[in-house]
Image 1 (spheres, protein in one colour):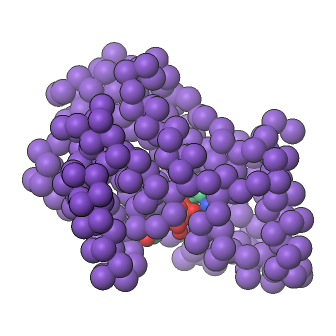
Image 2: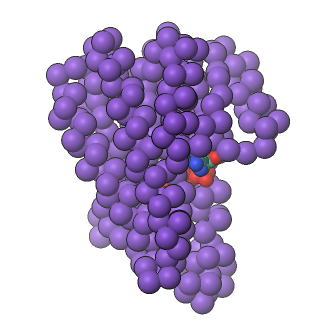
Image 3: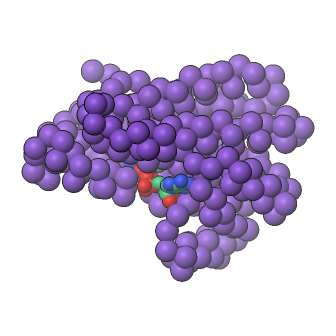
Length: 261
Ligand code: NAD
């Protein structure tokens, strides 16, 4: 319970990797604010389940992180509820798969806003409080696509490369403040985000579902295994430990060997 008394804000945590982060941090005693979209009753069940299972306080913000004003409201709600945000996990993200000359302009704008700019806004609002306490952890979920590209994912790859650069910059700016800033770059993790891109990839590449699973997704991953959300969350928990105080500005791959090739 080394995070008892600390507060973690995890964006995009009503599902997938974000929910795994929230539970893992709560499991170490942190109070958590979860965020994201979904069925109201299901989100409330997750929120109250975190409180009862881990004996922490859990709050929910329904902020749409493509909107700057809603990010500002979320950060204020976290500060008003818990007094502080000690751990910020920039995780909310979306994907759209299309060739660049057919890429819908509104999807480009949304992906850049959610996968990149939202991390900037949440970070700029979290840093002063962390500086004041001389302790903070900022972790962003980047992707193997922060290091390498795949066709038909121009917005996602651009945003994730951006997150890697943003991480390095903020790490340098906060290096003497007790704050570490890192990103985790998973390969394919079995979550709704991956499941939902299968139909578009089938269309874009004229493939069956099985071909997309084996020839596109797991083809990239030498282990031939999907990364598990719990594995990503466990790395984030480690980054919160004092033993990880010298890890800053890093882009930590967890991709089954994908980017080793
Ligand atoms: P997911 O679709 O399961 O979860 C996405 C979360 O973001 C959900 O909680 C959703 O409600 C929330 N969200 C979506 N739009 C939002 C908005 N406008 N405002 C606020 N919240 C919003 O996806 P996931 O796979 O768990 O992805 C989480 C992160 O991990 C993303 O940044 C993604 O790019 C990254 N990632 C995923 C994989 C993978 O294979 N699944 C691999 C590498 C990186």
